[in-house]
Image (cartoon, rainbow, N blue to C red; front, side, top):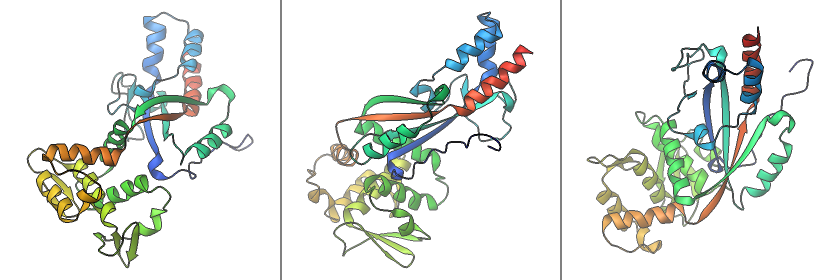
Amino acid sequence: MPGGRKRFELDLSAFSAGAVTEYTTLVCLACIFQLFTKQMHLAPRTAYSEVKRYAPSVAELTAPRAARPFFDSDEPKAHCPYCAAASRWHARLDTYRIEGGKTTDVARRSLIKQLPKKDDQFLLIETRSDRRTIFFDWLDTLRVRLDLDSEAWLTEAARAFLERRVPKTDWRPLFAEVRAVRRSSRLAEGAERDGARLFLAPALYHEALLVQYLISRSHQHGGRTLEGRLTLAELLRRFRQGDYLPQQKIADRDQFELLEQLLDHLAGSGAVTLYHIVDRREFLERVKSVYARYAA
């Protein structure tokens, strides 16, 4: 910012990629100001004060499908789908969800202390959830981000899972220019790079297959994995043949009960606190400019 204070940059490098989920949505300020000034008959100044104080809920900020006055668009000059307002009436809200726990608590507290306090530029919202719900939220977010029409998504999904499963390992150099991910017959844990191939310990490899299956499964044709398209029965057969089920002490029962046990093992159990950091800076700037137009 020339001639002014340097803009605060949100540095998330202290967190593993799997510990932070990012959400972005757009809000139409024309819709909001029309509500306050035309339907509620508030003066522009009063409407400005009310909108400026507005604190969106976590549900509004992270919903898979945005609802008015929020909407999602990748177009740089998008129009509001509700009132057709141009992009100058839109504000972007970025939300960063950090999962609480021993691996994130120190970095999270340090980050929160650094956040600017003036004008509520950043909001901190705490919620409680359980690990299975968080796991499936993470899967849904990952599914939206991946291009399932490209073979590359299998490697990207494996990397995303490993970043979440083993956060202390820096997976970026291990996955750089990787062409194939394979199961290792030598490794008891972790991973090993050999040229353009990445070898995973059997447990990690089988869990990566399960994540890929969950992301891409369909009712009739199963899910796509590093070992091709597999039905649930075929996936479980590979888990048995690779000794993954007995190693994890997962009993051999009905296939759907087995899937439930696998999900419990993969997602974990118990409650967890989620910390949502909402960046309102662009929102506040746009609210001010929109008010100037109404006041004029």
